[in-house]
Image 1 (cartoon, rainbow, N blue to C red):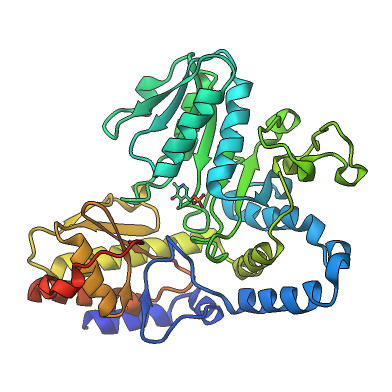
Image 2 (tube, helix red, strand yellow):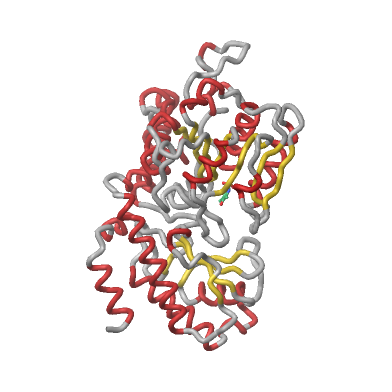
Length: 412
Ligand SMILES: *Cc1c(COP(=O)(O)O)cnc(C)c1O
């Protein structure tokens, strides 16, 4: 059987195959960048149109009550909760991942005031680095960031001086996945508070935040959750910390009674204490609608398909290329990998441009990583094989040597 015929059989037997029809995807494009920006769903398109025309257009200010705008952050949080192994009132939707990370780190650091170190990964996504530095610099007492390099073990750096451990569960470059339960338990053993960034995890892999006793987490609405560009993000907090959400950007939406217009701040007693100001309703409606697609999805089944897609891509590429400059950057063992496969190549930028020109959209992270996200809700096995074959052909023919593939755009 040819790889394409094998892939057609896998698609025919795929229990998640019907989800793809809910997405607006161009016919001539294989989209493997949902780890960076999830595609549009028909549901989000309709919800935004309706929110604008009906709720805003006709309902005007009355929609805060009549269309449930005022409870939207909590409702969207509750819809995210089952995807991350949390209870509905553990999660709230608000702001961006960056802003939420700052709020959560400030709370986490205040809980362990007096300890001297915030442990974080040096090769994390840059916003996490900047935010960690700022949160530590502004924390009560003298706290500094202790940077972990990729070859240092987290367990070895843990001691009773560690206030907070901040980790991104799945690495944005390589797709390498940490063991959330083990690391959380090890950090708790020395009394540290753990904050997980779920940017590349929520909607990509099954998560069990409550079972792992995770303290706090933040995550992204526009990657695997398909909420749209700049979609609002989310915050999770374990109930044991709910009474101490003294967050640094306490605004009127986090007040116990916002419409009492009191001069002094009194925090809400629930997760919505993390809210700051008026939520972006249109954007949040888009995310809410996209989250509807997850109803009835078995996360274990999703994981099995994700592993199978990633495996098929690696296998088809490696079996057919003789370009020795191409090396796998992701863990080979699926147990340590998220829903993404990365390859290194010295000409990564030009190869990716040539691939995009050939209808396969992935992306590139400097200096030499090509990333391919495999979102199981809409990616077909036939897409994976076609993408792998086009990559192999571009490498074999050195199509990427064409100067037009070397011009750099602002967003890679
Ligand atoms: C995508 C991503 C973010 C995004 O943060 P924004 O505030 O939405 O720009 C943050 N952290 C990590 C690890 C990411 O991968």
